[in-house]
Length: 289
Length: 174
Image (cartoon, rainbow over all chains, first blue to last red; front, side):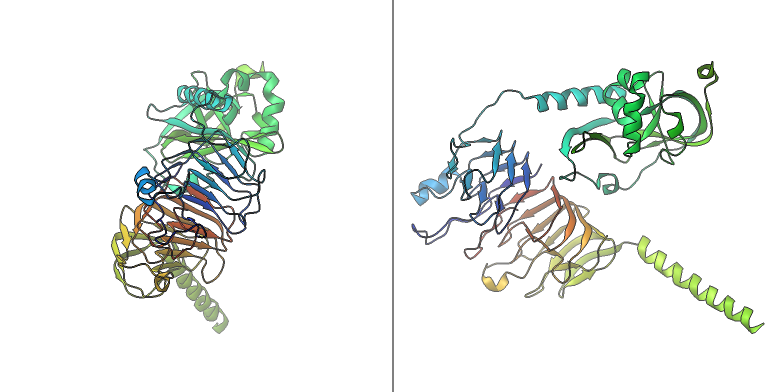
């Protein structure tokens, strides 16, 4: 989310032939296929401006766009000089979804504004449930799970999140960890499903696409191997006993889980997780019987 | 014997060279104070104090290489321009790719980029540029502009009172 406020100046010699082309967010030139999502845009000359030259495919959704331009600007200017959404593109070329906005200048029918309320949609509910569930699965009390949303593959993902912060690591301890090898992303959302034998094929598919594996202890704590999936991949869904050095990592981590061929779900962990450098690993004897 | 010595010399030279290369990659360039000619960065860099820019007709800080990061560390980069005209339009705060296309570069806040005669941050013809946590305010043209760039992430930034005087050009926050 970005915040845009008070951007843009009113043209001093505005006439019917002049244009008020300043904005909070602007799609100009030959912009296409952009996603403008979940921003707060207020007090700009125009909130969102889409120029006639844009090539379409832009999606403007779930933004709060209001107070563009400020009422004092409109009063002093004495004419309509801007709008929450100023749309000069071809109707239908771009998509407006679930924005909260009041004023619209453009040709789309029905106009996307005013739109001041909407029912609680599935994505909102899903995000809340995922966040609540994920919090209960994290090892550290200060940890929190955020941004568990569906993204189109190749879209605007926070890819660099893990490298955005300097890595921080707490002191390490040797420990023996006993638990089940699970697809970590799925486990954090649906622990019982991820641990079920019937999930093995699904987990294997996720593993093939790079979703990280972890050892889930009986009390729900996840231990991520420091060397990736290499040592655990042959033990998916098996109970194992691992001995090694355990550290609490405090830098953010993202887990990506494929959802069909065209989408993936990103689960971002902030606040910490446990990582184990495995020195010895064995299938739990109880599992062999 | 001489062949062995030669090999040792080459090995020594290589070792010293590798040491310096590695050192340069690890040590971030520290930036603060007044900049009077464009500062081009080629490695990870960070602000260690406020920066005052006095570069006429050119950007203040320019990315010169792909795969590097600039951390603002809560400091301010400012030009304190008094009048916005087309003559000041090249005086950007931070530019990416204005000389050659770049990829995988990042600018991390918190930090303030303000009162430039051009754009706060200009991203031109580049790929996978990330700008996160930056506040851009009171710039004559846009806070951030992306021209001919792809797959960029502009996340958790604040844009306030930009496009103070864009001479009729379509400008604003982003």
